[in-house]
Length: 111
Image (cartoon, helix red, strand yellow):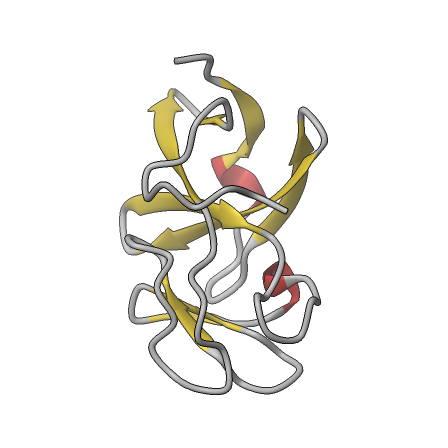
């Protein structure tokens, strides 16, 4: 695994994700309670940035049409999205959030 710095914990505001680009992949890093998650920052339905949507109940919501994706699995939980987003491994090192985009956790290939 090749973890790299994505952002700092201090960059998070309640209910929002942080957008980063790692090795050419747009990633949305989200916080739910004390856990951090990383998913591809692209709604599989509307093709817009998920990081611009809200984070709640371990879900990230697309701001365009309201599709919600489980941050743990990448699976859509509401329509209109039917395809999952890629998920990536996350580590916390002090105040830094590290993400490994070299492989996905759920087998979905990032666009």
